[in-house]
Image: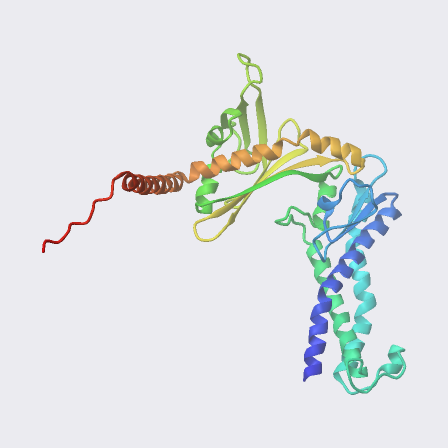
Length: 381
């Protein structure tokens, strides 16, 4: 019984390693497919995503998200486009199916041998094994079979999820979504996260969404905006164009008017807008329930760029937009203050009452120190 529990613990402890190996195999498939069509492999990230790829220039880098892996591929010139891009992004799924085809027969064989009393030492090629203990023949075969079946299951799950074209909550895109974008568009853009800001608003998500969905509220929390409104004739959801009149840089001059278009609209959870004059700049607003009656507001800005950019070019582009993070933090705090007026007043009132109580105690103590002590009355005989 103790050995069975020990074997189960060993299998559970191996799960993160199996997940990492499966992800590495998936990314190797991307790399091999990219090399086959003339693309180049810029590097690998173990324990992270493409957003964790730094500008250090190292081919192999390590992140802090254990179990994840990423291969960064790009053409030598231009954009990821056409059938070459489809092959590059389909290589990961193809490698998952190759791994399943190679591991499933042996995995089923090992599992069958481990569940029966039949000897499989000769088939494994390990020779005679101990009759008892952790390295017992049957226990070892059962462990190998379980890991093999687990490896096949993880690869099946990974291939299935990547065959579903969607954008994950973290902002990453599945391989099928990349391929679908390549079918509908001429080229594929690499999206770089420029800035992100998050704040918890003590208001229900529907109320926060209603406030942010009304462009007329924008001047209330963004001091750079004079007026914002929905462009007449545009729909309420996807395709809506918001016109923003901004304050001029020079006093007395006319401020610029900018247009943003909604390209993703999922009330009351998520909305993505892109700049009308610069389609490679997008902003995402994500609302998540955070306890009873509270909402976590997260705003992220993405920059679309060619995958062929050098690390120096990426750095210059990101540095040019370095002030956006401070603006997001300022606007989020303003939104929180606007939606929590009575909570703020309550906190201010409580602080005022505490300050007044402290002052009363101090005045009482000071008055007691200034008064002379009254001698005790003597009793008459």
